[in-house]
Image (cartoon, rainbow, N blue to C red; front, side, top):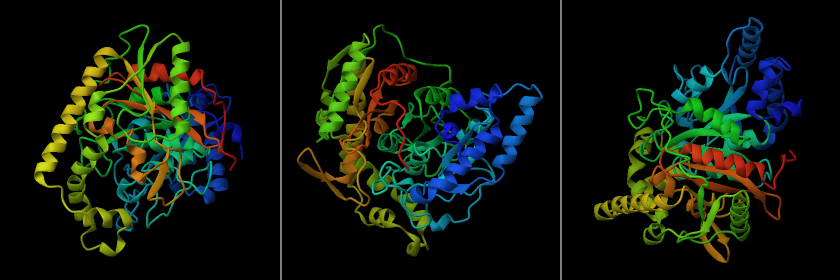
Length: 465
């Protein structure tokens, strides 16, 4: 098993293949060997794609013939099992969809392939992607490669675990409230939730509520996120929310970049080690010459985003779940049963939540008149033990879903947000920080994240699995 290849980032692998220092076959085989060696412990990869080695041989032949190639030519990738993959099972974490094989690729999968990447396999998720831990009745529970007794998060937890453990260099996930950024933080990798609509959701299920779902890349480096974003973004003519040209970017209008940072601002308790990591990242950016201020955002203090999200989604997520589970009630997992058993939000409360989201958008619009970037925690506490419903954070006991208190504001508002590792707990678990910019200012996030990555105290750490 060649771990020298399996812990390279996708950009490095593409360069090695393009310069013919290694073959695509060697790279794909190394990742298949890694899956065979460690996935029995993590249960991150739930389906292998037939023909990956054949595709790698064809990629090597294309290079040998001197043809032009894409930026990820011959590099393997994985995708969360909610993304349609032509000819490869997409089972959505449920026995109801066991054996389902789509005929076409999701737009983002197709764009990865157009860039030359080779689909290696599909990764685990919670039932229907609707929870903060990746567990379901069909393919079971995924374990965090840093500590198998802990969760890698949800709903893209299988994807984050696969990349962190060296089974995949880059992959695709989706995000309704935390599902790209939280799993990345829990496993020590990076993820980008671009502005809502930047990456089409075509071929990804579920879609409801469409205004909050995002698709995006997870990877081992910021440059990999930037590379993937460069071809994943842009309209596809099918997703009506994806209507901004790929080339448009509202970022990098000021030098130096103006950064505000916070660890609470009405969002509830935050783990002390997480808070200290955010402060360390703020210091690093200040030392790099950016203008950095501690801030508070009144809109976050007026309307609790997690409460707004819960009141909206108690109604909006029910119809698709009720539709697909009708007649399959004995195949439902815990979350679906809980969701369908909760009372609908009264109309007046639902409307109030809608108005609260509008106030939240206005509050961030005001904030980004004065700052280019917001730095804050990704998750309110590091990766937790499996199956927790309550957890004590900085002396307060909160519901486990509180972990998303610091991510859900940016699903409600559609703002772009990035998760990256910048610290380590006293128990050796990764800690991430979150960077947020104004709408369509992905360049500000990616450039600042690359700078922060270069100054990170965390260097080349991999789980001992």
